[in-house]
Figure 1 (cartoon, rainbow, N blue to C red):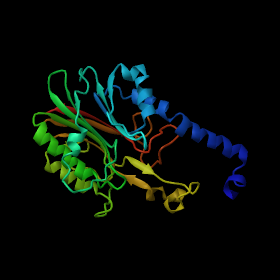
Figure 2: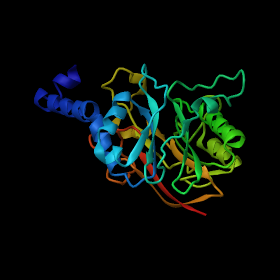
Figure 3: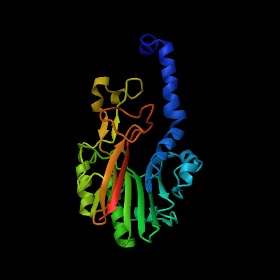
Figure 4: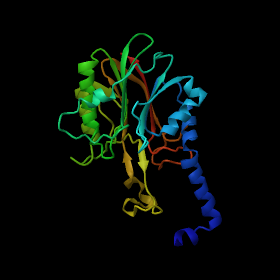
Length: 294
């Protein structure tokens, strides 16, 4: 109360508060869709933690709906309202999704093992390119600690081996892995990299992930209820600063031609700034990768 009422006058704080609410709440969906329009050259877009209203809004944007099959699961999570979604370019994948295989992937989890995956976290589908090549495309949102990421990767690989041996994999994920992991608590990005390399996959970051290729840079102020998670303005590096986002694909089939990340919505990434911002409404950066056939 002292901070809000005495230090900054109401004439300063109230317009600022209104601006934040407008940018990060009321206009978050249309703002995000405008940013995605700038990435409409992509053949595949994998999104995570998507609300059902966002899916409806995306279908209403002609620049996106005319370009993409906007694919969501038949079993959307309407309680948490956080779902993985895939955009498939209509010229590259004219048939769109041919079948959803999310349940088949989840069936590959080891019996008796509880994997911390919630409804809506995984969307796995099959499709065929215009040139007749079969694909499996997966979008996945990992749990906060990243402990589901390796089990899901193993399940995807098991499904590919058993049920789709001739298909190519495109796997876009918010892996929620950490630069400095803690065994049993926080999944290490290096262990994740060792695991996908073992299966013959590579990533937009290369055969081994880059520990400081940060795609999150979040820090909480003291103007929120969880004070134990707050950091000082000079110590934002103590927040969630981690290499969490990845695109996986078959190493023997594809090689990276161009890779970049974005936390501005303008196709560039500014290191060391906290986001979301008024211009960029997500707490994860965008990763964009162009791959060529080997």
